[in-house]
Length: 349
Ligand code: XUL
Ligand code: MN
Image (tube, rainbow, N blue to C red):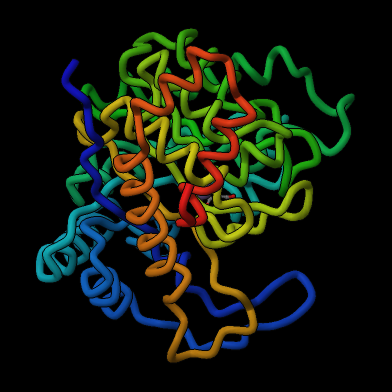
């Protein structure tokens, strides 16, 4: 049997090089201009960038269509000048005073309308940047108090919003990025399973996929590699946000593999076995610099995550498949466990 191998292209977003503010303290690093972030991406071996709509066009809501297009064209040129492409654009639907109570699921119809119009503008920006998909991180779709919304209607409202986007543009792919909590207490689409289910409810399921983020699966008490495998079985995994997470804490976005190397290995294993990337899927690294990190070394979380991913691809490719098959056939999973640990630790087995 010919072995399928993954083909990997890497991306991250401007928010992944940040100033270090957290809910308890101010910024500790100076902002880095977008052009410098692009130069850093190229230097570290990334091929693409991810954007929020207002990463590309700041203060978007106050601008005309012509102003938006002009600004987006400048960003497209900046990308080309750096030898990069745009992977996706995501509508930032969690900042505006109009999205305090949610976006597509707000109780105020004017606010729901705003969210859909803003998503259409996001698609326009994606088209100018040449990004093939938009990502919906459903940040405030849910509630702080269950009785404040009708959860069944919320699901249908999100479906209708996605249908409006599908109808607006005949080509854009829509990727749902689920997360169980933060900023809201209870998200209405908390897991990859929910997102996959929702995709089938839309008018064009083939144009609706998912983006699986390591930390979000862990926050839902699930294993990220199983979530990725589930989405792959449905042919719905169109992007990933690899990072790491130390259990049920705040959304940490730690460097890939930094908490649990074996869990990271299994994510790479699942992607590699499928031949992820063959259909143009990207490896996105949604990682955050530690607040303690100084200005001149503020991209190590990205280069380290990339290096760990590549290292783990080699670990998957150099696994002794014959031995693995023998141990599985003998049902000696204790020995398989030991072999895998030795292989990962790089010690003689
Ligand atoms: C939020 C998150 C976002 C999305 C992009 O937790 O992961 O960065 O990936 O909007
Ligand atoms: Mn993410």
